[in-house]
Length: 236
Image 1 (cartoon, rainbow, N blue to C red):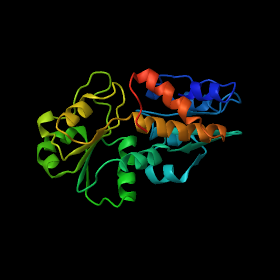
Image 2: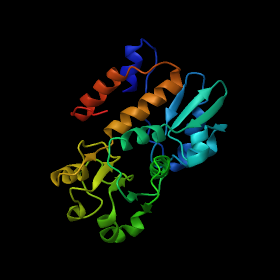
Image 3: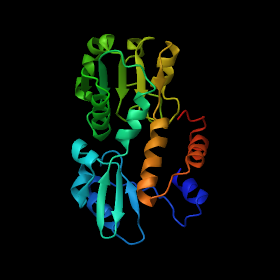
Image 4: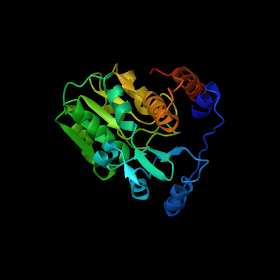
C-alpha cells in the first residue's frame, strides 16, 4: 500500500518490512532517528513497548498506552495510534445493539475498547486467551464479538467453537490474511454481519501515510494495491 502511495505521488521513498524480536526493539527504534527515515509502523508484539523508546506520545497514545505509528520529526520520535480512528470507522458499519466481547488484551484490544467507549458502549468484556473457556457463557448475550488477536492469520483457524456464532451476533475480525478469515466466513454462513481486518488495515495505513508525509494519501492507489495483495475487493 505505501509503496503504491509513494509511486502515485512521485515520492522517492520505500516501505520495508522488518521482523524485529523483543531484544532488537530498542536498536530498531534508534535506527528510525536516521535522517533517511520518516517513520514506521509497529505491530504485534511491540505496540506497547515501543512507547518507551520515543520522545513524545500523541494524545491517543497517552490514552491507550499503545502505538502503531512512529513519526520522525527532525531528531525526535513521536508515537501515534491510527488504529483508533480506523476502528471507529469500522464500528460504524456494524450493529451495536448490546454487550460486546473483545478477544485479546494487547495493543489492538486497547484501541477496540477505546473506540467502543467513544461510541457509548458500556458493556464490554475483554477476554484474554486464558479465559476463552468462558466464551460459551459470554457470547450468547453479546451483540458483537471482536477478535483482536492474531488467531486465524494464514490458516483460517477460529478462536472459538463456530457453533457459538449466530445470525444476530456481528463479528469484527482484525485479522486480514486470508480474507475473508475463517471466523468471518463462518459468521457470514449464519447470516451475521461480519467484517475482517482489511478495511481497518487500509484506513490506519492511510492515516499513517498522512502523518509521515503531511500529504493527502492516494486512497484509491492504496486500496487497489491491498486488493491485489489479498486477492479480494476491499470494502472500505
